Length: 235
Ligand code: UDP
Image: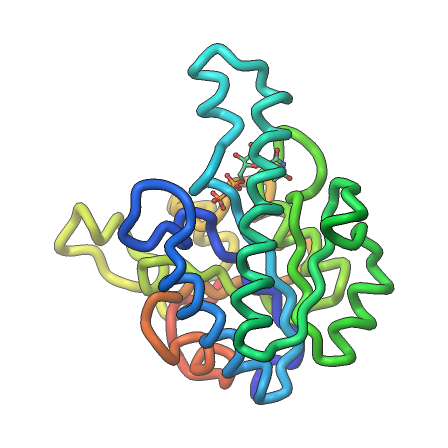
């Protein structure tokens, strides 16, 4: 395996599958088995999951809600997704721990970096819920932050497109995919990989990002084996 310790970022929306809202149990189980494959190869896996399938802070604002209140709801949504993923992984026989950035002792461990690292060393999948614990951030920022904290080798951003393109491949038939691209080029070309806060945090800490299609079976294993799947953003 090319990577020993990875941080997998999954968006909340990915969990919806064919649905418009919430969690599709079939999709959830598919993700669990993809993750199990790499755990069995000895890869240490940390996961940050989004909450957009349940609630986004900004959508609360458009409905007249206070932003911070909405963001709190969004962060709680990520814990719900984390619990669902934890359950799916454990059904598959994978040992997991859920750590939350917002204290809720009956539901999840608090985020403690050293403890998270210890779990990883023991081969447990660590799911980080609650984002960064702060409003006005995204789970992409949480993913980069946690990846740096646990010293992951790379961030794997699982999406429904198979990498970074010159333009949106769902709108432009002439869009071409990059196999590799530098952080600077992403910024120069105005390409969208993560929000700017998350992206520059990754750049400053020299943490590579691989964007790949998580919905194609076997792709996650290919990525961690070092196969040329998706797009790698590097210095
Ligand atoms: N959120 C937050 N702080 C964080 C992470 C998330 O306030 O550190 C809130 C924010 O409202 C966001 C929601 O949680 O809209 C869900 O996260 P995100 O939109 O990143 O999920 P994704 O798009 O990955 O599903």
